[in-house]
Length: 155
Image 1 (cartoon, helix red, strand yellow):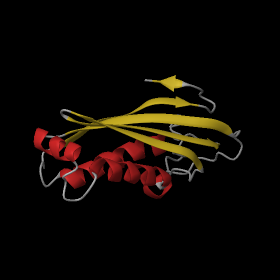
Image 2 (cartoon, one colour):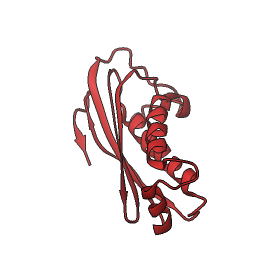
Image 3 (cartoon, helix red, strand yellow):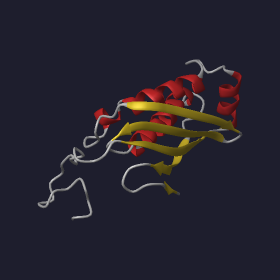
């Protein structure tokens, strides 16, 4: 269990001590997609969803979620984010979300980027479910991370 940083020598969950780590610039990019029926895509594009501007609300929800990641994921450290951006690309069969999170800190921002994407896509589902209850969220994953001891990683 030595390779699992959130488990102690007895196998109990704990928050990793990052006190001795150096403060470095850290950035992570995550993505995911929601597949949506054409009628719902048309309504999103036309801005005719009864709940409002789906893309604008999803973007704000994702950014807000990134800022609250440590409240949602039990062993995540609260981080002073320096940037969260969320791109939502409306396509013929769905919406692709790509989030970038950054901080100057002692631990990475992968979870913040992944949380931003997840909540943005869930928000789209919530706002479009009156038209398409069969939407499918898929492919949520980390694309890239920079900074820290492990350096640069790319999918």
